Image (cartoon, rainbow over all chains, first blue to last red; front, side, top):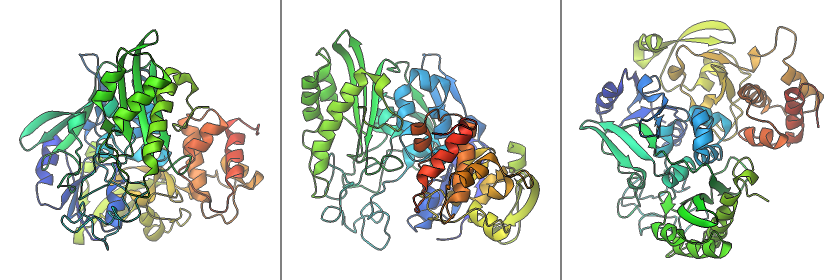
Length: 339
Length: 170
């Protein structure tokens, strides 16, 4: 644990300017991940730029196109319990409430949720090699303990998973991430925000240097009719997902006209298969079709020993969650499997 | 709030002067940016009711109320809370009269060693204020950020249910 300096930004432009002071200057919002990483000596900031008091980041507002803008500085709990989110985007509300604990959701912000780091045990141990923490040093997870690790989109260099629940729902909902940086503002479609490890596992996402997330836009379509978030983990609550699934459908009778399925806990980013979603469109909402879609999603899935079980678990979770999405009223608190 | 935080002054050796209202009492102190709210309470203000368990946001022992909301003081920098209203376990009784949650914890044997209790009690008060838990299952789910290694969880949930339901208890 090192000492660091501290400044408060007075607006977005000021924040972007202040963070450029050095390579080791970071934004701090909720701090729930950053302070933890600092205590474990995984990150050693020279200076923290506090963005908690920026009014520009702290609102949830309706957009003219019928969508909803979630300020990056809004707390996860305030987002999950916002009346419009609860009514129109219940999948997002459920996913947020399946993550972390009530205290952490009161602290953590929407922007910070997107930027949380993996909980890979080797990443969290500064005494061992890790290509994400120390590029080129190696990946002990591949041949080590890898119960929590990825089965999809892995690389020779990294098999870490991205741990967010909220982002699995945001991926399914086709959210857009708005950012501001030294070169101005831009918008990033959610599927292009996070990245697979490839040969740069040190990069979790496609943010450019010194860019700040300012808000997340949800499209008008919220899938309030048929949705479900299922989270499977080693404890009933307050644990990261081994596998999670976000599913939404638009149904025309029993025929699926729009399907979204996103997985958490299985890859370096929330995982969607457009091939599987297209397969389901025009088909009957049946267990048989859900199983065929699950096979398409998991095509190419690869285990590393301890996490081999995740392939079978993910298939069952996808099928079960698709069935739960047909009856969202049966869902239990904490994204537990419905009876 | 914004004006207050912008007034935050830097003093010697990287310290900042912050104002906190703790258990109704206004305090001004000079603090380094890397001091957690937990260490600030325990080591700088001698309020040792709030406990340090894991110091990593995994156990909930350090839970306090910040502007009425339950948060983890171990993952909060004190300097970020300039101007905030903090309530710790020392501040919840009304004089000699215990808070209903404190009394309910006694009534239901909701602790054994007692180390997690201050965090459990602050978390329970935060949960009741939030008003989102309507069933026993929801109380359990929304208290999952507070671990009790003695295994008093059944008593803890019983105590909260008693206060939530205004005296009745399952």
